[in-house]
Image (cartoon, rainbow, N blue to C red; front, side, top):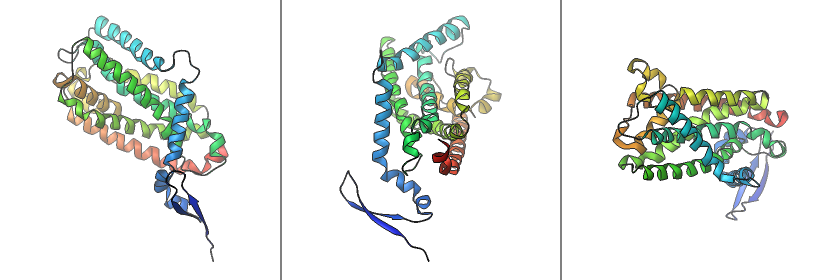
Length: 289
């Protein structure tokens, strides 16, 4: 015979009564619905990460603007002036680079913020139950704040060069969501590995730096030979960057559909692997942190 413990819980947001049943295996079966029930915790952790990031800093959110601006200048000089790589149509090279950096910095920031989130929340994980997926997901919200600041700078830069987007820009939210999904799979995988193997934190900066140069951030993916471009697009960031440029640069930047489909397939695969591994090791987090 088995016995269940039933408690009535009052939600602090809507003051409605919800029946919480504690029994073996129930948390596993209701994991994804629990993510919604713990949405207030997600908001609290996200706000905590944002305030910690920018509280008591000298330049605050301006750092999120200075870093991509300096990177844009370096890439424009190296790839545009010295290497003389072509741009897309008549797009000014700084705009081409900045449009590629937007999704890349979103991807790399989510990867970096999420990777150390479980260690940073050790005091919370070891004391109370909640879906652990909330922790790396909430850490990624900081990257969205930086992204919005960078997007504002890009629009200002486009206005400066008198280069305005066309109707393609309405699809930008879809590619923003794709960039988040593309980063979430590797982020969950690395986050889980970092809990068990602490030296993973030394690997992450190398992965980010390596990915910056193998992705079409400082150059147009049009320069990739046609016979290997589909294989190059297996890098999920490639499809995201091409999609961003198609949305922001209009007809000057063509969307390589086979490459986009390859990036979508790899994004789905990495997301499945990341979630599966994270969920498989989640039970041991409280003991390891």
